Amino acid sequence: MALRTGIVGAGIVSRNNHLPAVSRNPRTELAAVCDRDESAVREAVGEYGGRAYADAEAMFAAEALDWVHVATPVQSHFDLASAAVERGIPVTVQKPATTTREELDDLRALAAEREVPVSVVHNWLFYPVVRDLRRSLAAGEFGEVRAVEATFSGEGRPDDTYRGEWVYDLPGGDVEEGMPHSLYLTLALGGVPRDAESVDVQTRAVRDYDGFDYDGTTLQWTTDDDALCSVTFVGGSAPNDELRVLGTERSATVDVPTNTIDAHDADEGPFHLLSEQLGRSATTGRSVVRGVADTLREYGLDRAEEALDYHREDSVDGHYYLFNEAAKALERGDQPPVPLAHSRWVLELMEQVREDAADPADTAGEDAAAERVRDDAATD
Image (cartoon, rainbow, N blue to C red; front, side):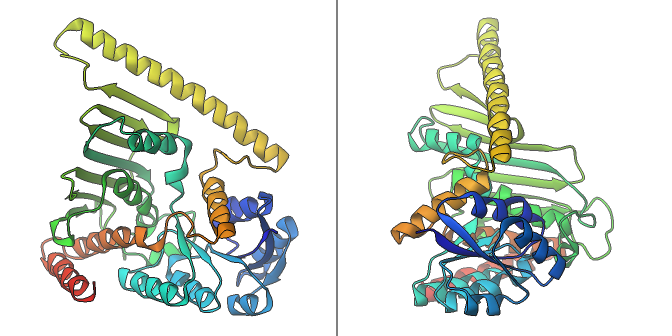
């Protein structure tokens, strides 16, 4: 029997991802859509079905829901997810899970108390190229991971957005809304910091903005396994979303937009020899050709899925793949992929960025991180 699903939010992320994914999946039935914008919710149910609501609490009370998707501005995530959990309804919430780590901890505690699974949309983890990379890592093909680097650029200015004016309430504006992707990818591939105090954060703003503290940041940390991790996320730059994984047996550069994994094994080199340079160039060339072929294949599959209004089990759509895996987990009575715990460090890192940007010359960010460490020690 299909999971009766309600979606809170009929904005751009819901229209592009949640609504089509839920309506196309045979494991889910779109029972209801809620949004305070009457025209948006009417348009959504007109295209995808279900009943329209203007109030989430009313939807939770009237519908016998098996699953709720929260696809609203982040400022509302905590209240909406908590309301669903209070009624015993499993929840999947868009990234970032909440505005602050304090909210996240409160939501985790409530979910644990009520024994209700809550998960987060970290959809880039489920892009085909990232799925391939994670499978290779899990198979041990990289040996011991020594470093992971993420460089993400191409976001707009913090004061310019297509997402909605709600992003202007964030310290980093539109830049901050996109930043979680780079953080959760690096955390998943490289590992979490040893502790909050060991994270180094630098922020910048290339101009004075009215109401925004930063438009770029670099974070660095070391994991318990001694892997060096770094994230650079900047707005107002030419687009480039790239991951690098350096291991004892293999290293790889992943160009996310082109689905290219350029991998090289430890026995290559030494590169002062022309023959080794040519060999590396040939390997890189083959990687590019495979990337182009994969992109063409995925484009064709994506167009076919759109034309047929259907998604395959191994869909190239990261949102659909994640939602499908979540639906299967809920059918089994299991926790869906990306539990709330996986967002804890995402929120910690985001808060450290905000603190540094608020006053880069001040040590308040370090003091706040130390205070959180002491709080954790007292509650763990």
